[in-house]
Length: 127
Image (tube, rainbow, N blue to C red; front, side, top):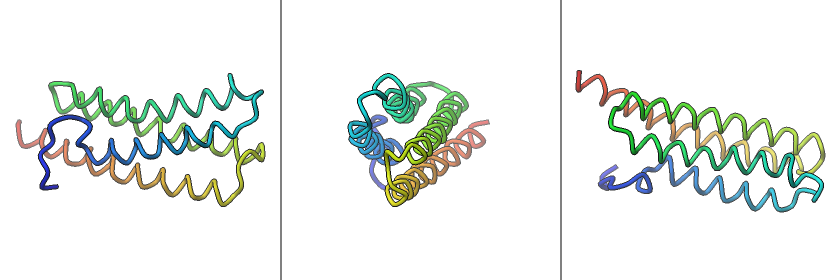
């Protein structure tokens, strides 16, 4: 982490979540047309919420607020995982696809948790 962070776009957690969001968006295009206002919309919305909350949290003045938005991002990741299980159960994706996306999602969680821990340390060092 030698690179200076000038915006949320420099954050590793945002970059990893952006890649994930783009892959989810491509996947959602393969869902049946009757899911357009159902699962397709839901999974795109929850994956977009991951990056949006990281960005919004970064723009907040207090570390605690930033942490709260990152926790919402974490919630959106787990919501996206639930949508992926629906896609699996409805046979829109294979088990292999599901496990690939799940592994990518877990990587997002790991990087996001690292960022949250970093923010917690900053918060406790400024008290």
